[in-house]
Length: 299
Image (tube, rainbow, N blue to C red; front, side, top):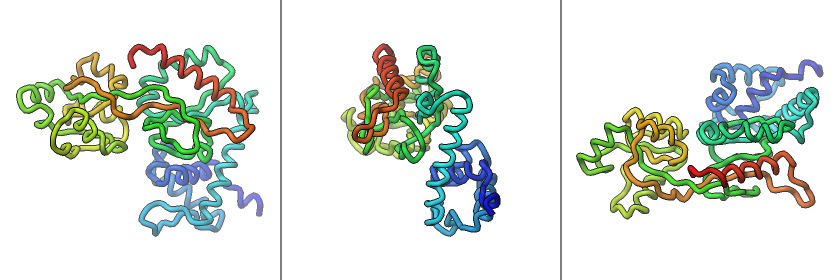
């Protein structure tokens, strides 16, 4: 009976991903599997347990009461397995650091600098996961996150890294069209899905009358938005420091000077409980990160 109730790690990972992300599609993307594979793993787990974990009749992916309870146990079990693996490799959890990072910030700003941190702290094992938007650090087993927003993450200790400046950019062909016509008014606009008010805020800061044009397309990630703009699909409002390669190559052309967006980039860590000492690896990474930002002349 006990062996029958022990699920495979693959099934646990699939269910945990659905519980964390809130959808089969996002879980498939998170684990680099197909949506069908995730669905089959979860169905196998439900059959093994003899319990329904996900309400498939709901308009969106919703865990049942049993599913919510099992999700907490599954997350704890996976964390124990992860810690056990670290200990088997001769590393303690204290020397491991699990970080959630923004995709484009991670690949374009952070990763080129990570070798310097590794050389300084070879004893720390880094583990990265990409996340967009706020989430529960404790529930996801993350030690810290690098997040973009207004610095309003409840129940967390927040360290400001940098304030963001954005500029409207477009492919050279669209930039030439704007110069011949009425500027941005003649061009389609593209936007980040997570910032529906970005264009309206930018127009207000520029003192432009009228409402912002409805975006032709919306994108989840800065990198994808930059690619669409470089392909000539429209004008994008993008953080200047994250598109420096496109600006240097001429793939994207600024249509106006960069301006503060009202957003920033923050290092976010769980607020320690009274009497609790912050994890040393988190403190070391935060201090290193602040130093790197201070010496960065691009931002």
